[in-house]
Length: 454
Image (cartoon, rainbow, N blue to C red; front, top):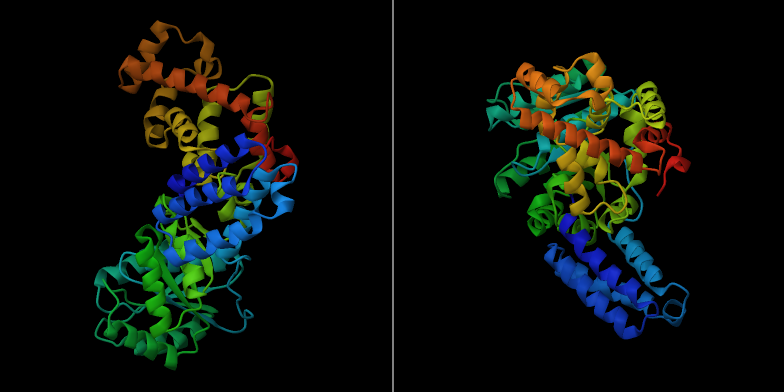
């Protein structure tokens, strides 16, 4: 889970602050020392941490804060506001030219940062805006890169342009503009070559492209999991080529968060997108306020709402809600709910956006709804009769033995599934009081914040 380690440390600091009731200046300074250590351990740039803590301290030790009704909460709000400012304040998005003109984006980055996949993800995003993208393969050094681009273009449903590796990247880029004109493509995404490390040849190639092609955006893809090294890479690219912004990939696997918290402050360049998974749909606009909320363990309900509006089946959500209300939730509904959540990025992705979801709670729910076991779960459920699926209470030992034999599993696995099902049903009823998770998911699909118990 992104920021998991940092979130736990910060939550412990704030928990101790809340216990005190009234706060002294010494209490605030002690807490901020712990915040400082947590940020440094999260691989945030030292100068950034120093400036951040100083700024929070200046705002938090005023008499109006320490003498207020809820000083701990006020200090937490100050930390939240400063985190938002640190990461850029407002979200930024690509401003595409009119559909009659061409927007040209040059993707840059080291090998392994996810540049080629991200190029296809951006193609998918602009297609949703009614544009026709063209993915252009400029990596003439690594044949696998061209193959990967073609496969990703096919998945995204985008046009793709490549030429023989014997051609220079600049020639390919120029030819792609003619091809785009012929095919009616209005967003051209240049996927440049990556290297294992920053080198002069690589930079010169990018500079040459920038000088000869009317590029609108130079976007640098950096791997969030490399922490401070990612920030150093961003600084090098900006100094030698010039970048308009950054895309952070693998943020879902970065438990520390150093790159996300440092890159804007160090380079002065905004973060456009965050890669939160391997699927082509797993690219989110980077919202500093939502990211700060995630870091502080307060969830990210707005992103969850948007994902639900995009991916959720309204009719199925309503049906689940009604069944939960009438306590008619059976094994077929269990599979339906799992598949609905899977569409939104899976259990882990959804839970990571829920307020107050620490690693312990995450583990508990993941144990009950392990996505990797879904195929085996389906096999067991489909070995039940329709009556057994709709009325789990009738599953006697003899029925379970028959189901196990039909699914080709040990009866212990059937018992485990039944137990997990009961845990999940119980958990769903707890969401939103007695209304159940069905209601919550239905509310998400409608984007109605009043549906939430948070």
